[in-house]
Every structure is written in C-alpha cells, then in structure tokens.
Image (tube, rainbow, N blue to C red; front, side, top):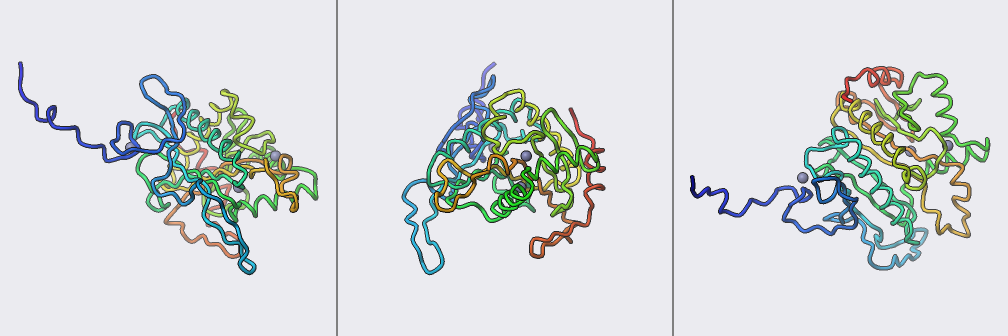
Amino acid sequence: MTGDDPAETEPRPESACRFCDGSATSLQVVAKSPNSPGTPWSARSVVHPKPLYRIEGEPDRRGDGIYDRMHSVGAHEVLVENPRHDRHLWNATDDEIAHFLRLAAERILDLKRDPRIKYVSLFKDYGKNAGQEFSHPTSQITATMFVPRRVLYELRAAREYFVGKERCVFCDIIQQEERQAQRVIEARGDYLALCPYAPRVPYETWILPRYHDSSFERAGLNRPGLRMNLAALLRRTLQRVRSVTEDFHLVLHTSPSSIHPSKNLGYWKTIDDDYHWHIEILPVVQSKARSYTFKEVYYSPVSSETAVKQLREAKIDG
Ligand SMILES: [Zn+2]
Ligand SMILES: [Zn+2]
Ligand SMILES: [Zn+2]
C-alpha cells in the first residue's frame, strides 16, 4: 500500500514551545544534566530569551549622591526542568526531579564563583495568577551583584538570632516543630515540609534539611540518596499545595556568595553557622486574597494548623 501522506511530505510544523526538545528555536544552552535513557538531556539551563541581567561587561559601580549606580550585570537563566512539556515537578519521576535539583545546584555553584556576584536566586512562578512566563516546565535563576531585599532581611535576622543565642534559628524552629508535631506536613529522610508559625500567605509551606546546612548547592546535593529524598518531598508537597490552588511561587533561599567577602563590612563571617537553606512555597489563593502586608507584618486568614491538617490529608499519588 502506498500513497502520499501530506503530513509526511510537508515540513514538520515548528513546535510552538521553544523549550521543548526538538524546538526549532535556537537556545543558548549554558549547561545540561546527563541524559536519562531515551532523551538527549534530562534538565538544562539556557540563557533567558529576555535577560534582566547579563554577564558581559563590568559593573562600573559609581556613587551618585547616596545611591550606587550600576549596569545590570549578572546572569539570568531559564532552567528547563524536563525535556517533556507535560512533566512538572509534581508529576515527573523522582529521578527526573533529582536531575533538575543537581543541575540547579551546579548552576548556583558556578555562578557564585564569579567575584562580582553577591547572590544567586532560584525561583519558579506557576499559574496565571503567579506571573508564570513560559508554559514549559521551567524555573529561573538570577545572579546579581546585590542581595535581594527580602533575602537580606532574612539573613540579617538569622545573624542577629545567632549572635544572641549562638544557635541557628532554623534549627531551633525545626526542633520545636518536630517536638510539637502541629505544623509538620511530612518528613522524608533528612528533609522536612512544614507550615511556618506565622505564614505570610495561606498555606505557605517550607521545605528544609533537618540537619544544619547553610548552602543548598554545597554538601547534601552531592549525595544522590539525599537528592532523591528531597525530590520526592518536593513532588509530594507540590501535589498537596495543588490540592488547594494551582498557582504558586517557589523560591530557594540559600547562603549568599561568601567566596569573596567584603573585607570592610565583615559580612557573612558566621554565615555557615547562622543560616540554614530552605525552599519557600507561597501558594496564590484568590478566594483568600484578603491577606495583606503592612510593614512586614503579615496576616493570613488560614492558620498554619488548619493548613497543615488540610495539606497532610490531601490525596497524593506515590
Ligand atoms: Zn515545551
Ligand atoms: Zn540550622
Ligand atoms: Zn527564606
């Protein structure tokens, strides 16, 4: 049997998605993780098509009154979490998610080696109410010559607590939460998912290592066993969050770059002891949009205890 199938003779239509494997759009690939069977790569990092920061050029920092003016030097990358368009961090395999986590760690480490870089952020905005940019499963990384303000507040608060008590505030939170067992969603190996005591938004959820570690990208991620536990906990936690709402922000908080510390300011001298990396998931719940911020005081209409109960009981698979 023979015939001219028009679909065969015509050129294949371009994939509408630039990040899908086989897309005709050429991307500036920065790094990729080793491929799993049947795919050319399992996660990869590409330069953002419209970068907010560029690595080329000198910062040319100069004073202008009390302000520092500088060009936006830095890096802005898209982390393609999976070659497949329909495999998200909540429905991919733990192995695929672990590949993504390892790539993220490698990119952060690599960007921190640049002496101009003070902080590397990893974040994901998902859903139309969260400002999602691409339909493909992606996260983004920015490397900046400054520490973002929210992170800076948190770093300073952690340092102050450490100066006063000589203990890591996050380790203290973990100990108390594990003892009280009121706001813990799930523990998985060395990782914990919990709803913080004073959430900024309803169903705010954190994922932290149970044992002290200031940098996501350094220690634990070199151990594949740990990475698989983190991958599973991240997947399961996102499934729980999605039982409440599709839209969320996810941000990784890790230590700032301390490879080239400022000699004058003496910043981050105790960072390895006073800071504890974690992932923050901030769900966007439209019906509960009454939460507001006033000078960093947050009000959430859903208590952590109620949120935990609901998230714990959410139906998830595997
Ligand atoms: Zn795609
Ligand atoms: Zn700690
Ligand atoms: Zn944080």
